[in-house]
Picture 1: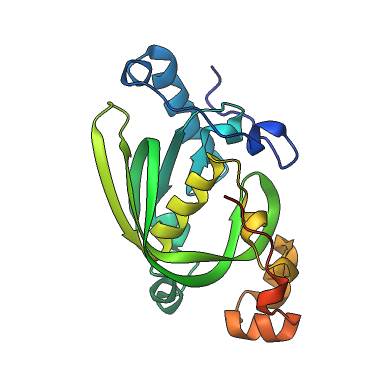
Picture 2: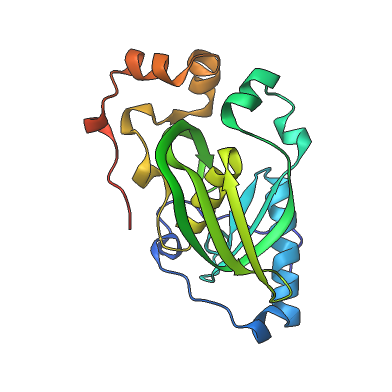
Length: 207
């Protein structure tokens, strides 16, 4: 298996399927160990803060997550605080189940490795609780808020055939270059006002 895998893009049917769960025996298999390593390396190469197995063509309930300090370096301390963004060490989640603990929506621009070079404003729950298995098949519980909660919701959506474009404020969808040119330093309230975004312009939510 190559160290860096191809990331499939929106339109590929694998991104719209509900992924199947993994058994503990499967997680212990050489194939899954190799897949996890390849997913980690692919995520880091992109670079991204998370990657779900359907994004590399495998319809499995498996995600890898990592938000290292170097990816946060372009943000000011104020921006990191606003997003609730703290470093997250590399970890694996299999068969994750997510429960919303604080449903109040928080809006920020978000990207996806399967919607290449585009950003959009996506409302996400403020705080979530996730249960699942780690890469050794051991039960784990993750309680997260801020940016880590956003990452968890984004990646677990992939396992249910849901993309961030399904949840976005549709008028905010744009190429990365346009975000950098016009909106990077603007608040979400300013972006909403400038682009004429109302609740009625939100994309249709997935399951």
